[in-house]
Structure formats: C-alpha cells, structure tokens
Length: 130
Length: 129
Image (cartoon, rainbow over all chains, first blue to last red):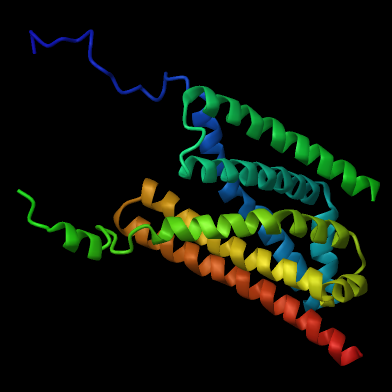
C-alpha cells in the first residue's frame, strides 16, 4: 500500500460527516413523506368505516379526527401530500431528462419546499374560511 | 464474452423479467394522483366535522364517493409499489419477503375497507329513498 496515490482519487462520501446537498435532502423527503402519508389515509378510512359501522364507532373516530392529534395528523398529511405531489412532478421531469443539472436541481428543491409550505398555508386558510 | 444475445436480453426484459413495467406503473399512477389529490383534499375538507347522518349522505353522492374511491384505490396501489422499492433498497432475504407481504396485505385491506364503507353509504341512500 506504500505507493498508492492517496490524494488524487475520488472518495465516496462518509455519510456521517457528509453534508447532503439540498437536492439529496428533498429527494429523501419524497420517500419519507410518501410513507408517512399512510397515517393520514388510515385515519380517514377508519373514520369512513366507523361512519357506516355504528353511531358509537363514529363518535370515537370523529373525536380522534377533531382532536389536536387528529388535527396534527391531518394537517401534517396535507402538507406531506402537497410536498409528495410537487416532488413527484419534479421526478416526472427528471425522468423526461429535464432539470438534472446541479443548479437546476438546487432551484427545483427550493421550489418544492417553498411551494409545499405555501400550498399548505393556502389550504389551511381556505379550510378555515369556508 | 457475452453468453446472452441482444435479442434474448430484450425478450427476457432484464433480470427482473418485467422490464420497466414497475416504473411505468408508478408514472401512470403518479399522474392520476396529481389530478386526484386536489379533488380529494376538497372532498375530505368539506366532510370533516359533519355529524354522522350528513357524512353518510355526503359520501352517498356520486362525486365525493367516486373521488374518494379512486384516490384510495390508486393511492394505495401507488403506496404498495412505492414501499416495494423502499423494501428492496433497505431489506434482504426473509425480512424483505415478510415486509413485502405485509405491505401488500395492508394496502389491499385499506382499499377493501374504504370501498366497503363507500358502498354501504351509497346503498344506504338508495334504501332510504
């Protein structure tokens, strides 16, 4: 190992000290939001099934849906759904061969984060106004 | 030396034997969900907080029932295929098999529950009328 050139070869990033670029973080977040969305859909489907089951079952599910926990799950799911939708649309563009340059991926990452937060706030405002 | 001819590799659709089918199915369901998501959000937002009788009447109407059914069915099929990729990435061997089986059963159980509830609400409305 004495004569190996140690200074000039590409090294794989050590994941525990490597600062992930924004495009990597937003890409991983797509997977996390997609899987986390299961909480929201299970809550809503439980609430639907409880409505046909009995008044008691509905009262229980409706109490959870209207509680602070239900509000956090549904509002979180709503943002996660917007995020996953925007990031998913970005992936469709990636698949078609667009937006793959580092600068473009950085910009689209910012757009996905900003857009999902803006849409979530907008959705909450609409929900509480109407 | 390549032991496999180009024709054979094309006909065999690669090592998974299904080519890009999984990716294409994710693309199609993603586009469907991009359309369904805003509609589903509006549908659910209008129903949350209603008393039970009005929830039953609301989902007996065609558009709320169809949008909810389509979103849950397409969404959970998208979920099953999406978790499959995650499972393939992070798990091996028996754990992978168990995780795939759980994911598929869970996904279809959610679909069945939602469709059952919607059918009951729809039929309930017809019986009352």
